[in-house]
Amino acid sequence: MLPAFFDSVVDLITRTSTDLPPDVRAAMDLALKTEAPATRAGQAITIIAQNIDQASSCEGPICQDTGMPTFEVKVPVGANQIWMRQQIREAVAEATRRGKLRPNSVDSITGENSGNNLGPGTPIIHFDQWENSEIEIKLILKGGGCENTNAQYSLPTELDHLGRADRSLAGVRKCILHAVWKAQGKGCSPGAVGVCIGGDRTSGYTHAKEQLFRTLDDRNPDERLAALEDTIMEEANKLAVGPMGFSGRTSLIGCKVGAQNRLPASFFVSVAYDCWAFRRLGVRIDATSGDITSWLYREGTTASTPLLSPEAVAAGFPRTGREISLSAPISDEQIRSLKVGDVVLISGRMFTGRDAVHAHLMKHEPPVDLTGGVLYHCGPVVKKEGDSWRVTAAGPTTSIREEPYQAEILERYGVRVVIGKGGMGARTLAGLQASGAVYLNAIGGAAQFYARCIERVEGVSLMEFGTPEAMWHLQVRDFPAIVTMDAHGSSLHKVVEEASGKILETLA
Ligand code: SF4
Image (cartoon, rainbow, N blue to C red; front, side, top):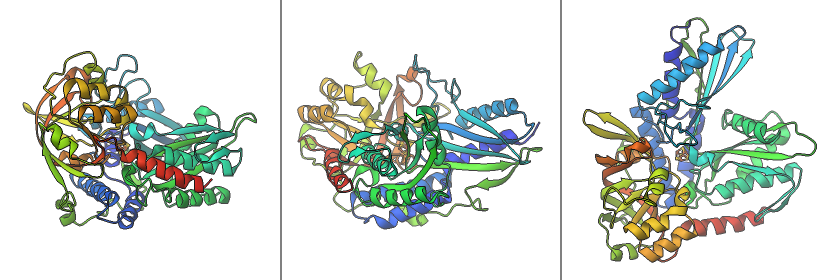
């Protein structure tokens, strides 16, 4: 059996998780040149660019959410797919052991993490046969934040700001624009959308995700769909959702549309939204040795061109001199002096907490004193080194999932700062006002950048929830984030959503 196959798949996973392909880098380079450097959007894109370069140079995960591994495998007739599936599964477990993938496979009923990314339905592996002597494996790692912003429409339908969407390409156009607007920064914009017109509810989503295997710069062979893709790219980037939903010129870096036949009674439009951390690669493999013969999406070269100079990466967060430094415990007075748009640098102690921690705190006292403290919505990648721990990737997770809990946790335990991404809702906004707290938006996916702001791990609680869900006690220095919801009832997320909604109306 192909002796090098296992190592080739581990290499593919490692490279996919740590090094963006040239077409995505080119799109992010354009975004970097498009956004004005001294704006929120410009600062966000600069951090993202630093993060992309840091990840490839240290071979660390670009984002701490290494997503649902989805493999598309083409094999010569007669190849042993049972053996290959097993090898791919073992390679996924090995990449997880090496810290290239975060343990992300959770029992849907008990919430227990399998710890190795294996479990029913995880990873996703699709096989196809082809008339070729080589094996081809393509891999996409798509995280939960952007997966949660996927959307499916059944036409005809009524859409906010856009009115009726009919069973036509004009109706499809409205659905795609609506999906980009609705996602705002929750899926870590600027994103890319894969779209399927037609199919049924399941095949539509599958085909939409398959579109994400196309390169961002290809040309759709169907001229009608190519024209639609061009229109969407132009119009979506007028919406001013911008990087991380901070407003700005770049909301979308790609739109790829496919079509499947449908039943006469159904007309679905399925949209698969991927974030800027668009991790997609592939390899061709010799079917006798298992060696990689070539990399896909890399145009014959395996080297990546950095987005920034080494000096620009080393310079760290691009400061304007207006940043405000804070360290816990933080007073009510300090919090109430902050306004939406302020850039804050946090130093000192910070605790992570996401879904399991929030649910736990509704029924139990916290394992640490949270008074005046900083709660970070983050599921880090953490490595055990002897008796201590080291965080290797630590970007923010999507905060809106904690909306049912957040206001009560602020009130009960005196948390002053919540950090996450994508913003939160009306209940949390009222809770921030009542309890004297702020919500800071960190740059989604900037896992390497933020890992470098963590000086050390001081401890961990609730480890029974698994690595990403545990409460990590972190000592940080100059951790940058932007006040997007303050203690005076203002929310940047609401402002951008309403402003982009008005622009959407002009595109109806
Ligand atoms: S960049 Fe954002 S949406 Fe993408 S995987 Fe990371 S956290 Fe999730």
